[in-house]
Length: 443
Ligand SMILES: [Cu+2]
Image (tube, rainbow, N blue to C red):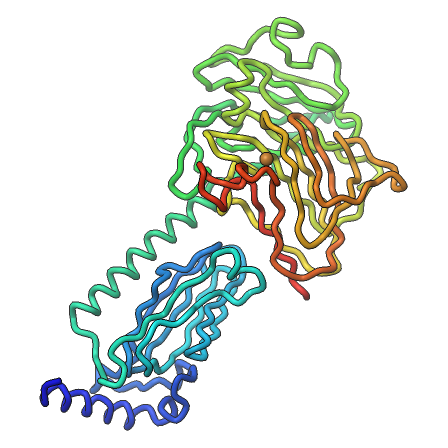
């Protein structure tokens, strides 16, 4: 080292010592941002900000670079739907950012090296939330060159762009939105469905050619009460004819939606109305019944829920809908492949009802970690309590529905997934596909 840089290093170390007695007294111990120096004269000893983005199930960047020998403010920005932390044992860092929030801490990084970093929330490390933190320049009072600072900024900016893109992808497009109805003067609940052709994002940046109702895969949820008179207006905006079949519920033959058997095809630009009394109560479906192997696989399906008129059959704190399918070469739950599938969050002591439906063309053995579940309804029909099987795998075939009830008593990050292991891949890469993270918090 040249005498000039040695002198500069000593000067910087001296300045740090002068301005940061607390930080130096507890080296490698996080100090509150408030304790960081507000020293306009010493730009190089102001904490260097290092921003890390976190989402399910990754840190960006996953190779975190920290300048050594000076205070560093670590900023953890959580763009995900679950709480996460950034834990770096070697630096005594344990920084928690709740979903959608940002947290920060200032540390002195004074030992060169590369250290393990991860999310310490139970199960998250195992799901791939690992990173490394590299410190360089410790002991020299090394201040980042303009070039290094610019490189760090650029990588943070790139990370920001990357993560915000992912966030848009996983939250801006969702299926299963509950469809509002209009009530006519004579008490008919009217729903409007448009069959449309669009691109659907199954994974961040991964668009598949889709057909769907009202721009969604699965289409919007139709929820009514047993005994309601309902009308569904279908408008065909597809480049080909279509129809709707209501699947599982009782209805007049003329409303069954089978082309050339009960009705004529609805051609592009045409509309057709289905009207019937909703019965019985249960978990039912609606889907196309024309050119089905193409149209249904592209996403022309949705949930049709008829609630019992005398209140729910099963008391649950939370209802989750999961529609399985294979779309555009991806194995999807509610139109998304893991890690874009929506996590289920609940607390110990809660009861979670999952309405599981299969609108794909394959059978999927869905397996729950951590908790068994009770099968409380099959194809919409209630299972008498004495016959309700307790299982941790339910094999669901095309067109079937199972209502399964979890009684949560085991905190942790569990997964609920298809046990055909090529179905938990995205085009051959594991993990992906039909996996949902089931986050059970202790309180
Ligand atoms: Cu499967």
